[in-house]
Length: 94
Image (tube, helix red, strand yellow):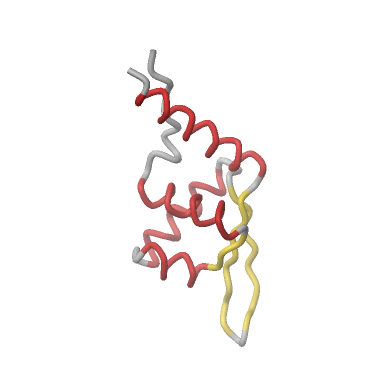
């Protein structure tokens, strides 16, 4: 019948972040904020959730004297995204 949707990716903002990483490979915090139009606090919380399950790696550094947070999708995150898309497709095949 219906495939279970990954609750981590079913959040609109987390799905947007992962989708951005699918298309751009890496993205920093500023780019994510620019694309998603979400607040810094909300983005931070969602990044923590994605990192906790191993869907993204987070690299923190200093860039032009400012803190820089960069995300990259992991292999596990890519597989989770592909499975999520397949699960959505199963909903359309009624």
